[in-house]
Amino acid sequence: MLERELKYYWRGKMVSFLEVIKKLIPGSYFTSTGNPHAPEHMEQFVKEVKSKVPELADREDWDAENTVIEAVDWAINNICKSLDHRIKRGISCLREIGLFECFHPSTGKFYMVFDEETDADFGSWFFGFDLTRSREKAEKLFKELIEELE
Image 1 (cartoon, rainbow, N blue to C red):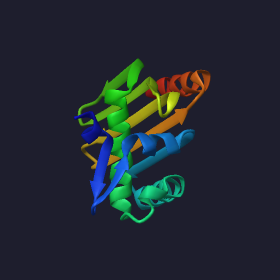
Image 2: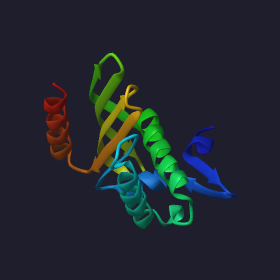
Image 3: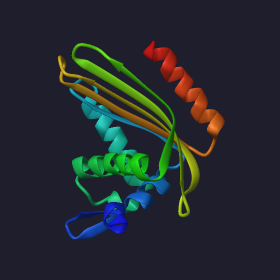
Image 4: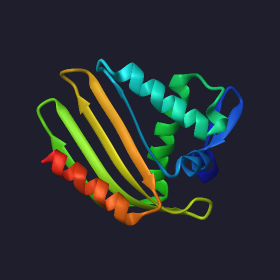
């Protein structure tokens, strides 16, 4: 079952979520929908991801974006442990940030700072994450996000 979770199939081609994550370390990434800058955000996100993960280069942009989002979700649920987590809820909005320590033999230890915000009134969504080998850098970024949240 784990092997099935590790891999994503697209047009008969397989990509490992672990390989996606491994090739994105280190880096800072974000994408969004429902705002005037969303097309630029997605274009930049996909361009950077495709340059770092050649297995995604021939995929359609939406599929490359979704594969990375699924890889991050898989990592959070399978190879990461939460060091800190905050949620801010509004009437129609939700913002969630998290600091994770992650490890797998093929990636080694790394840290992830996760930031996701949804606003139902505006139909907008923001998804960002940072991957680093430095705990100090991850903690600093997480602290900055907490200050922004409050």
